[in-house]
Amino acid sequence: MESKYTKVDLNEWSRGSLFKSYIDHMRIVMSLTVDIDVSNLIGFSKKNSLKFYPSMIWVVSKIVNGHDEFKYGWDRDGDLIKWESISPSYVDFHKEDENFTKFITEFSDDLFEFHSQCMADMEQHKHQRSFVENQPLNFFDVSCLPWVKYRHFDVHVFDEGKFLAPVITWGKYEIEHGSYMMPVTMNIHHAVADGFHLSRFFIEVQELIDSLN
Image (cartoon, rainbow, N blue to C red; front, side):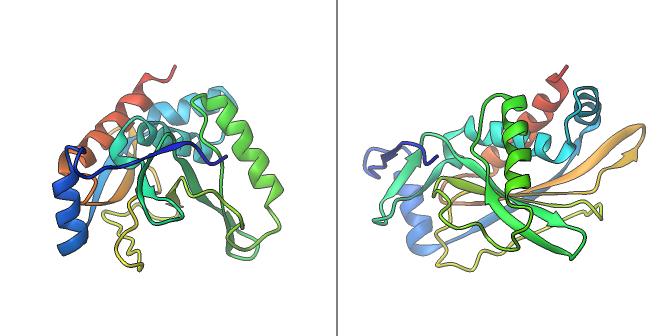
């Protein structure tokens, strides 16, 4: 499940100097929330007997995997690397006891294949109430707050300030002016991405949703 990767030479990487400055002097995480029109994804999911949650996980995973800035991390020796692919680590909430399971489903470029594996993983781990052990390192974080339509949401990762993967969250969708609008949030380390990259993520998420037919 763990993908291939390449080690990053800061002297050869075009962003090497910026990365080093942020890691050494200013460990900043940027957070941005954008309302996304998910009307087409809701309709597409219903038409194809898919659940919305894994379908949305696939949407953000596909865009994340399309850009290098979201695929940086550290190997087990602490060296900076860029993964060939990165998979979502997401929460499965259990209403019966208000606890959750946290695990990874390997990313697939095919929505239907990913959805099928996602549902199988949820079934496999449905009795656990924990982080599933022995998960791969090539992951980014996904969570959902389907109970409220928020305006802003922020997650603070209390490590040494070196978690480089995206943290993506969304809330409840509601009808606004005839469309189902849903807040989507991304947190990302400034060492690997800028406002331009954050903005492009949301633009491409909307474009991908709109393209489903």
